[in-house]
Image (cartoon, rainbow, N blue to C red):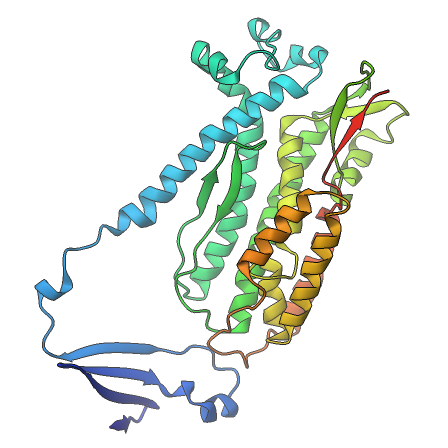
Length: 373
């Protein structure tokens, strides 16, 4: 039984077992209404149980939403703060040349040799050592937080239910696997999907640039010296990174390298994070943009991008890990509630801006090793 009201909504009653349900659906879900006005994007579906009446027993105990929605993200953030402080302290104490420790560390800590002494043992003896990780951990968490808050605020703007950012602590080189938000409601339209997808990379990039400027400005050009047979880790420099080095330090003479400040290392990772997320594949931010711009035909392009990531594995083995992540996420993108609502010219121009940001942040070989002869 269907009753269409004056406001274009309908009421449908259905019986399941001993319960009678009423589902109120906005008539704009009807394809006739979508064809009549493709600009409509808000679709409202509400369900009510008419019989038997709902009781407190049926409702069950109240769920402590604050634990899941607030306490858990806060706990993960604090754990990630600790792991990134460890990673930052380890980088500061092992990667800087000895002569540069004079300006970074207190007198009693300048001779710490963490290649031979475990960092955990040092922290247990002198917890203040973790303070040396602040110049890396705080900028890194700021970049990650800006990226995810961009997504979160875009979700709020379009009325999409989403969680607060969840940081992922990890015993890695940088102390984290990154961060994410979980979208818990449907995406109303391709326009909303575009806004959610692009907000994170742009917000993260805007925070990364001042972090890079500070970090590169406080990095020191040094003569590269090494004993024969030693291997060294070097960072691949995206265009944004190498451009800022050129502006702030000028061309480095032959044999000179830049002893990176921890904030510069955090900014470098921010560029890498932005570039990876802008790959137009799967459930990455670039994948959201691709589906928002081209709709379902975008799936074929997503597979082609996956093959490109696999080929990049011949340049840098780490791309194979990213390819595995993309494969597990899948290539198909779920549709929005109103796929007929196209992004429009202003968002196409923003997509071109995102492509430029990707070009500034991408490097085919993020990390490489050099062995001295």
